[in-house]
Image 1 (cartoon, rainbow, N blue to C red):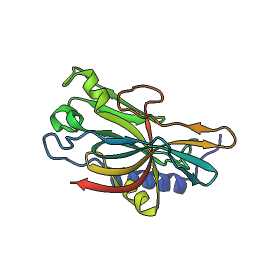
Image 2 (cartoon, helix red, strand yellow):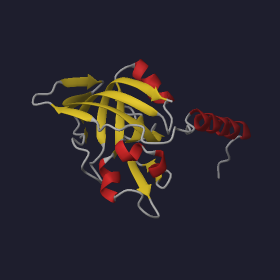
Image 3 (cartoon, helix red, strand yellow):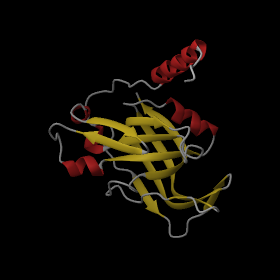
Image 4 (cartoon, rainbow, N blue to C red):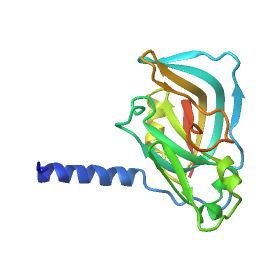
Length: 199
């Protein structure tokens, strides 16, 4: 069996620790922090953008300020070259510190999950006031903001919901509603503007 050199293992451990520190959760203020739902304007005739050999068909303009419930970075899956980070975002009651204290939240495999012992708000309120968003940075400035954002912060995003496709048949469609759940319910967002709103 191949053994990893101790120096390499040490470097990997240091890299992991530095990443965990960089993305550590903040301690947000109490109360409901992002009261407004995302604002979406559907496009009858969207434009086509290009990212390398991938075509992005704009389906709707979207703008939102939401609380970061969780983040997950991707480097090796099929979509990592396009959307290197997913943010699970909450607004309305899902931005309320008292509510979130009673909900366990995480991400894996491009999905966002939550668990409760007892519901602090109705199940449907959790489902319709939170979403997992696959984020495509439009430029280096947006990529930098997305690289710094931490769980518990408020982030403002503006851009387009897009369907991604490639000539070899690869496709990655976006959800167009916050009402859905399960596979296919995530938004694929081409982010043109991003800033950390608080704290």
